[in-house]
Length: 312
Length: 320
Ligand SMILES: [Zn+2]
View 1 (cartoon, each protein chain N blue to C red):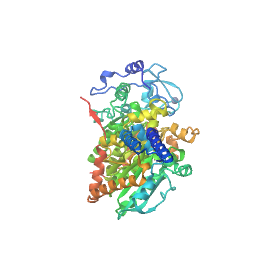
View 2 (tube, each protein chain N blue to C red):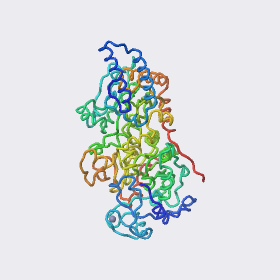
View 3 (cartoon, each protein chain N blue to C red):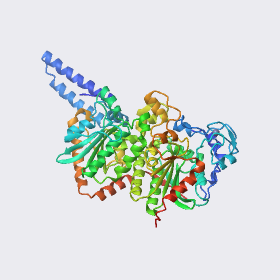
View 4 (cartoon, rainbow over the protein chains, first blue to last red):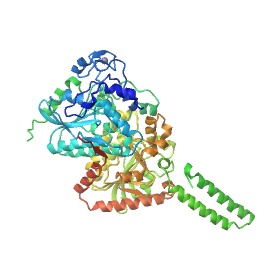
C-alpha cells in the first residue's frame, strides 16, 4: 500500500510543488482516470501511468486517448463514451463557479495524528504531494451565475476523500457559515468513507456535520447535495444524503456499504449498474442525474427558483 | 462460570486444580484446608492481574462474546412494563432493532437497541444485529413518538454495523442513517445512549446521538471494525487483534478523547458473568444522568447535545 518514492516523484513532475501553497494556486494537470469501483481504497489512490502524463490522457472507461487540453475543455468528460472522470476539488471549483469568485475558507486546517496511528503522518504528506491539497475537502464562498453560494468540494485524490477531523470540521464550519449568512449551501461529495486512522473521531464527524445541517434545515436554508463518483460509507450516510435536493453525476457510484463487502456477505456477484446514480435514481434515492456540462446551469436554475420569495 | 475467554485459561485451570484437591480431600478424608486457602489466595491475585490488564483486542472478543447480555436482556432487567412496538410504517419490521415503551423506576421512557440473536435461528431472523433501513426508520419513529409525549429516550448500542446487502442499499441505507443522525440532534427530550457491546460504524451511531453517551467497561466503539481495518491495512482480516490495539476502540480510549461521558463498570470478567449486576450498574448510571438532564429545558438539551458533538475532532492549523 505504500507509494514508492519513484511514484511520488512521478507525481511531482506534474504538480509544481512550490506553487501549492502560494496564494494563487496553479492547478495541476492530473494523469489518467479510471474506474475505481473494483478497487479497494488503498489501491485506488495508487498512481498508475501508462501514457505520458500532462499532454495526453486515457479514458478509464473506454480507453480512448485524448489531448489533456481538449479533455479539460470538455470538463473531463470522455468525448468518446461520456465517462465522467474524477475531478480534483480545485478543478471542480474552476469548472463550476464564476471566474475569480471563489474565496476559500479554513485552508490552514490540517490533520494531526490524534491516535498515533502507524504510518498516518507519512501518508498524509504523500496525499498532499499527490493531490496538491491539504485535505480531502475545499470549502469557501463564491458565485454561480452571479448567485452567491457557500460550497464544500471533496476530492477523492486526497486520501480517497476519507472523512477525518479536518473534513468534518471544515464542512461543519461551512454549514455554520451558511446558517449565519443565510446563503444556500452546495456540497460536492466524493469519499471512500471513514478515515480509519482517526477511528472514532472520524465516525463522530458524521454526527457533527448532520447536527449542523439540522440547524441549517430548521432555519429554512437551502442545501443542494451533489454526489460524485464514488461516495460511500460515512459521507454517504451523513451530509451527502441530507440535501433538500440531491443530484448525482452520471455513473457515479454511491451507497453505504462497498460493493466488495456486499459481495462477500451475500456470496454472489452484483450487477454492473449496482449503486450507480441511475440505479439510485430508479430506487428513489435521489432527485436528478445531471451531466457535468449541465451542472452549472441546473444549479443556477435551482438557486434562482429559491430566491423568488425575495429573501432580504 | 460461563463463556470463558482464552485469556481466562489460567484461571480456569487453577480453579480446576482447587476443585480437584477439594474432591480428593473429601474422598480420602484428608484436610487440605490450609493448601486450599493458599491456592484461593493465589487465584484471587491471578484474577486481579488478569482482569485489570484486559487488552483492547481481548475487549473486542469480550464485547462479541455470544453469552454477553443483549439489548433485550438489559431492557428486561432494568425497566418494568416494557411494551415492544414494531414497524417503520413504510416497509417492514426489522428485528435487528427492538424498541418500545417502559418504566424506569416510575418514569415512562422510550427504549431502543440493536438486537443480536440468542441462537442461530434467532440470529438469522435478526440479521445478526445488523439493521436494514427499516430498522433505523422504526427507531426514529419511536424516538419522535417519545418526543411528542415528552418521554426521555434510552438507547442500547450493540451492532457490528448496518447490514451490507442489496435490498438495504435499494431502500436507502445511507439516507436512513443520515436522517437519524440529523433528527436525533434536534430531539427536544433527554437522550442517553449506552454502548453495551460492539459499536460498529454508522449503524451504531444511528442510535448514538445522545446528550450522554455511556459505555460498558468492556464495550468497543469504532468507525470501522478491527477486522475491516486489518483487511485494508494488511490485506488480512485475521489480523483484527493487531488492528484493535492500534485503533483506540475501548471505553477508556473514548473517555480520554471526550467522545463518551462515562465508563459503566462491569462485573468481574465481563457482563456475561452476572447479568443482574451488569444491569444494575447500567441502571444506576442512567438514572443519575437522567436526573441531571431532567431539569433542563428542551432548548438547553438541544444546545448541549449540539455542543457535545460539535467539539469532537482533533486537528492543527498550518502556518501561512
Ligand atoms: Zn471514454
